[in-house]
Image 1: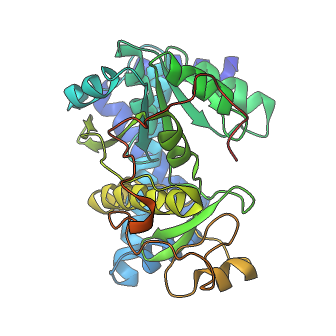
Image 2: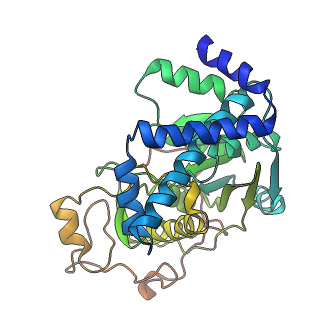
Length: 336
């Protein structure tokens, strides 16, 4: 850890332009000499965007330069030299928090995500990020040290009670909804036109608590980072598994739109689309959707064709911008 902090101190002594150029050079070196996941990134880009193989290679190379710049910025931030940040739409987050049910933030690994989580320190209420833990305890300790001063971290898959408690106190909980979720906990919704295993807990918590879901994304413009806070989503939250799948599909659409706007700053090296289990493939059919319990196989209750087309038999559904009529008084068992 001392070695990492030493590098952070050294990088913080450099002029911002030099540090930025060094980060881009590190990313370019990583791209050409250590091509870990480079092939994954190129395949993901080609299958997701309508571009040529040459354009895909160029895009992936720029993505790696972005990674290098972001790494240098994380280290400089840990040593007290964060990059300039422009926050747009703060009023949307404040309005959602004023409802008194807490706020659920929808985000993604877009731009310099670590810059986004550090913006949490400037908020009037505590902010928590649901995140996976590193397998290495040493790596986890280093990452926590680099993130000091930012939000608290809630381990994914084991944070339901803590999340409900935070929302009950009117706090903010961030879900990063652009990574593969293990089949036992996932629902499958379209992402760039292909079924992707996605965590339904954001929709589950929105339906259970009535907390507003506010999309927040960040991206780089030169050496400044723009953080855009969007209005709370008005997504019908239908009952049952179909409701979770429909809402999660809508959240995935919002993330996809943000990535399409800034494709050179997303985590294309991540294996977002993995082979579908046989029962999921059968359940999806031509819809691109499947629930965690594989309930949509044609014979049972069909899922609505779009999140904004509720099942007429279910009555008017609650939405992410309006609380359910009878919210729970105390946290129950963990969702999932």
